[in-house]
Image 1 (cartoon, rainbow, N blue to C red):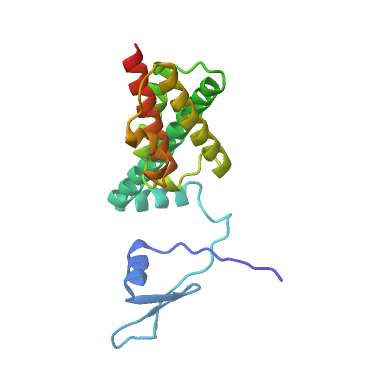
Image 2: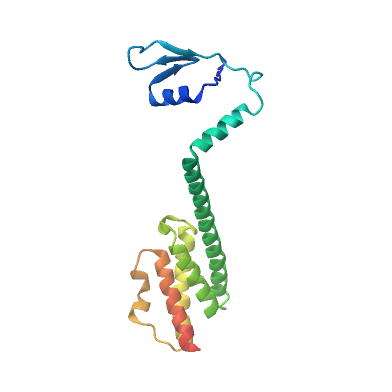
Length: 200
């Protein structure tokens, strides 16, 4: 079974009356919808073949329609541009966080952590927290984040011991402060930053 769709070129005033419900269209037949003439035929149109359409006729009609509704078109365009910028911004923040995380993790593994690496990672986490619903964005797997938190905790204790700096009660008990892994990680980073600053 084949489906055919007919095209009709209808005047603007007739089309607007169809939109308001004053007239109704069924195929090429336009009928009155209200008043004494309700149900009577107002106009009849023949389907347009593609050969009959003058070059540019539909383009002119589309441009006229866009011009007549320019406020709506402009608002939609601005919304699309804004949404695209938000998506790109989110993508950029997540990529920078991933890169910074990789550098931080490698520094933990190679015992080469510096204050600069800690501060950069803290900045990227702060940027990440500005995203709406950042808690629901999965950048790392559950296993990766738990491994990172455990490594950060152990490294923080080792860093404090190597620099003869006493951890506060809160710093010793960071893992019980929050269920949010980003907040826990930020707490470890703040502690590491404090140790580096006191040791220098």
